[in-house]
Figure 1 (tube, one colour):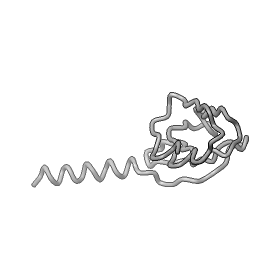
Figure 2 (cartoon, rainbow, N blue to C red):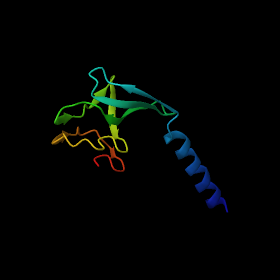
Figure 3 (cartoon, one colour):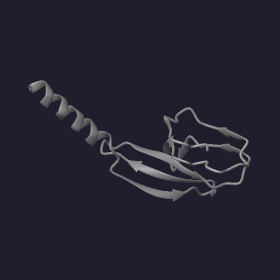
Figure 4 (cartoon, one colour):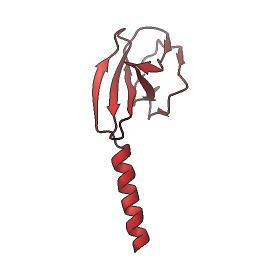
Length: 102
């Protein structure tokens, strides 16, 4: 019973410290991407690219936006963009979510 209680407490602690507190949707100054700045309870701040809105055929995803690391490509972020022929993804991307490139 003590082990089960300990595991439940551990899972709850991880959830509290990993779950984002808030996010705000913004657009880059060059009008290439929509993105969210994600604030975590731990103090970490990351950026998720939520939509490519540019017109280039060759896209370079920035490693930082507004001084924060870009770590995620969101669901459907490049959806339906048939003009894109090449995407350069920086090394700090940790997550490419469901259907990012459909």
